Amino acid sequence: MHAREPPGLLFPALPLASSVLMLLMTSLWLVGAGPSLTLAPELLLDPWQVHRLLTHAVGHVTLPGLLLSLLLLPTLGWWQEHHLGTLRFLHASTLLSLATGLLAVLLAGLGVSSAGGGCGYMPVHLAMLAGHGHCPQWFWGVLPPRLLPWLLLALTPLLCSEPPFLQLLCGLLAGLAYKNGAFWWLELSEQR
Image 1 (tube, rainbow, N blue to C red):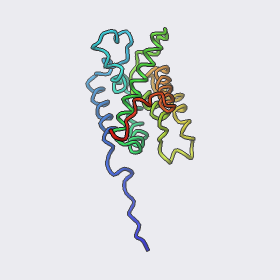
Image 2 (cartoon, rainbow, N blue to C red):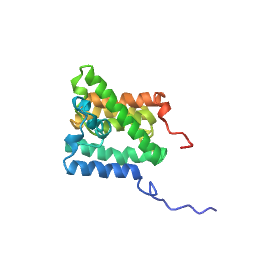
Image 3 (cartoon, rainbow, N blue to C red):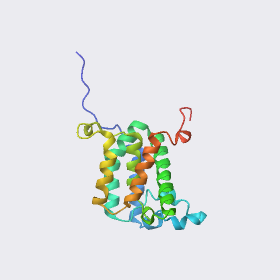
Image 4 (cartoon, helix red, strand yellow):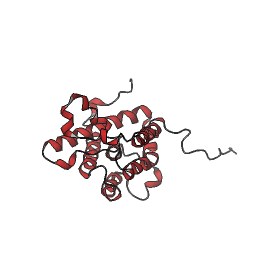
């Protein structure tokens, strides 16, 4: 007979990148830095403001938006980091944050004013779910994993006002583009 191992923790240790993201988002919100990180297309003309294409994801203006992002990082982000690895998770988060920001700025440049001016990690959550599809196994019996980003897209505006719906849609579209290989040339190789 084989001895069974005692049930262990869900993860041997807290995922590093997701935990640091949670700490960073909370710290930035506590010091009130959220408004200075919003994705404001009119400010991107200044070269010193280009950081907003990436930092819009970690800044939050409203408490409900921050709490939703913080709730989904341990729920979904830890699973994604566990499956992808810390380096690939950080790479994908950064790439999808940049792609979401660029899509939102493009829409704002085309005259859709509600696409810019938002901040929060929710578009990156949607992009990661649409792009990688890693979600907890307990969720599989409830809903197919490919429908989860669409469900979150529909529910997020009901739960909080941050970020704007079009920015959430930009995140989902960036994730679908990632899944279909639009960013293959930016992927990390196994050698790196």
